[in-house]
Length: 364
Image: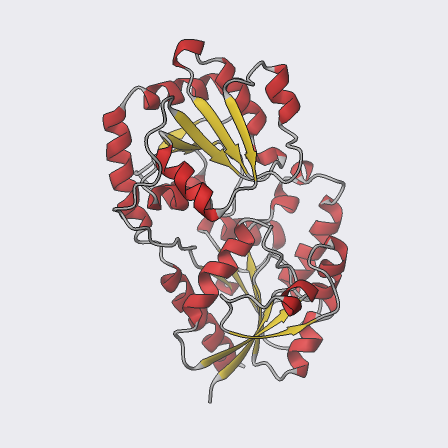
């Protein structure tokens, strides 16, 4: 008899970055497991427009995924009763948060514990509320999945969950046709960066580094990922970088792919990550990566990307200058990165996750 897997999708809006990339990448690959049947517990938006990538039906809760407080409360209090009501064997919550009380075998993917480790980087006074949610989630879950060994260590050290209760399952990346070269080379070299504008993404220091590159050899910097008026704009103007920095906001997948293909490198100066999916996304597209020298990026990028102390603007500027001046290094990194990215597949992520579901049921 097939196992019935309920999946919390109340959070999903299509505008939340890496957590949603995880859902869109992994759940289609889970469709290959014929012993699993999926039901998504969604929100009003998904009820109106069921996602084509999800391998099952959607049952909706009367909340909006755009309302942070409403969906957080629904995940904590309403998702598990609904999962039990539809006679699910397992509930999977893939977005960091889960039920406050366990009503059925529950697995939660904890992508990171930023609010616990660095509450000073959580904007809007939300750190304490997020801490409360993540602590209750980790306490109530039957098992925890993390994207990396670094995140597993954080869950164990900061939240007290035994390592034996945690499964480390790396994320995947969509394979890219190596013959798809995208846009023509740019007249002026540029580096690409992206992400939300939370403090740990470290864009302020990246912009400071750009001022330290002599103007005649300064590449353009293209930054994606913001909604509405970009909060980086005042810094760009204050530093006099209007002619050197393009703030493109939220771009389509097609636009982003073309940007990766035309860039001399992808620069990722983050100070904290649960995994670092942009590293793989850039590598898969043959784009060299220059990133922060932190353990989680070493776990993802291995020896196939360049590293820099991202707390040091002078070091970032020097690393950018070296990479832009060295087309041979760019080519070698692009080839090595493609090979590395090919080992991180969503099917591999899905297969390991399916094994977690099966173990939960067999142990029950």
